[in-house]
Image (cartoon, rainbow, N blue to C red):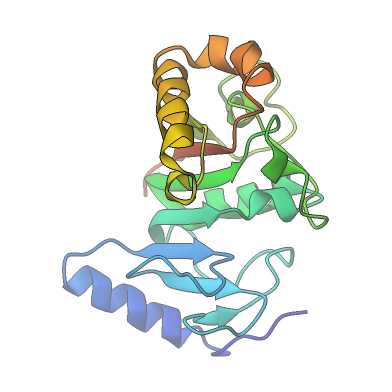
Length: 207
């Protein structure tokens, strides 16, 4: 089910026109909840404060034009989907050529991946190479270039006492410099990695 705030899509068109007139990027925050990215057009299933369009993200296509966004955020959204491929295909449709897609999602080795009963999937640093950057990309037409992947040991370092923070910074130092070793071996020894932070760029023809 979905509810469009405007049957004509004028709210988004007005937002996008205003952003472009001001020389600012058009930003879409999918599954924004009550913590929408500043300056973004927020879409969520629930009409929370800051949500600009109430829409079920599983109901594709969304009532937005193709190649309309410079940046798209997915902050702890992907893990809630039984079928994440259609969502990422819709993200690809909405992104302009070379548009950024910024993803935060639990790493498979950490407790955050599994403590929430609404989570359906967990991801690794290589999960996003299945969109054109490995030989097994034939299950989807969406194409992304993996710009950067960061393994984040603590999601919220500030909630831990200082001895834990020192430990966390030491682990993070290794993860940032040796991510393959960190994901393959170290994560099993340090209680798991909390989060993946991924930057993608949409690969699609211009014009």
